[in-house]
Length: 119
Length: 402
Image (cartoon, rainbow over all chains, first blue to last red; front, side, top):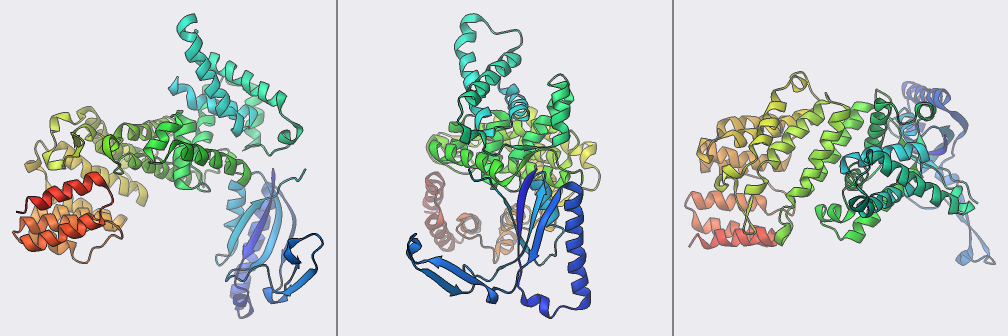
């Protein structure tokens, strides 16, 4: 078993104007994902993230340990695709994670990252 | 020894799950064998001897390893198989075969870059030396060694398993195995320079890889069609180069073709596995193989059934359209219906950074007697050609225009 974080990128504006039918498709896709994970492993947590406009980024000036804390408005990087949600799951391997990710809505780009133990 | 390589790698991986140690340990064992066997005699069970020697080396390495290394993630395997494997060990033949299939699927995983997957398959499944793989893919040996090491790290890091996937996914995964194999095969025919012009002997390793997989899944249509295609193309290797120069198909000495391979390839094409409906990938391999078979079975160049070849290209363009197939079809049309028809079929065809469309146009213009236009097309082709041997060939063709 490996702990994977499944990161979802999605244009958030698409959700706001979505029809009831579209929303239903999204809910069913997420249910299918969760059912598959429950069958083959464990879902530890999940979350939908607020719009990147609500993000706040905190850095130390010059990346120095004694640098001033600099707070900026917005996400890490301005890109067309932004992380919009995540799942934290435990599954046997990447093949299962790919199968699970392929159950999510078609408009998503999904990044699968194993977590590692820091020693 | 080479036939046993993949089985031994697979067995060692299922037991130790350490991709970083297993290959080195087996390499050391093979090296020890090459030192001691000539003097002491070959043991009764060579594979068993190698397995024991390799296991001892893995265990030695594990003992001397630091705590930090012991905490590194291990190769993931399908759990139920691990228990099964522990119960019966290596006694059951089919269990070992399953392990070889796991190895093949792991090496040709869609989450690896295709070239890395090809190189890794040749290294881990067949034990092809890294230096040979480097020559096949036209890169320096240290570059290839680093590429293989990176691929192994990625397998463990990304969570690619040593496992057979769900039956629903398996056909797609075997298609990727076929594509990986064909990539390794065609690498040997990508033009190089000097004596490495074709490196065709190394393409034979890809054929060996296909045979290993077919040994595990005998009725896999994509692999049957692919093996036929590779055999039919590979059968011409000895006639394709003379004195370091490319010899065109029409000018090749057909006596130097490998007729046993042609016979096997054509037999595979008419077998029951390819009789039913097949996937687009399989159809594309089978059609290319049938085109190669038309050439391979024509007694002389003049006897070539170009009408049938044009028909097969028409089908191929429906299944998997590509500029390269359109170009090849235009050549066939010129042979079948004359140069004017061939030139018409070339109309509007471009392949970015390739000299081939211009080279074909030049040849057809020369045949039609339009020397000035032919010379211009040759100039264009020569300017775009990045390979010394092919450029020389084009320059000689331009000279003969007078």
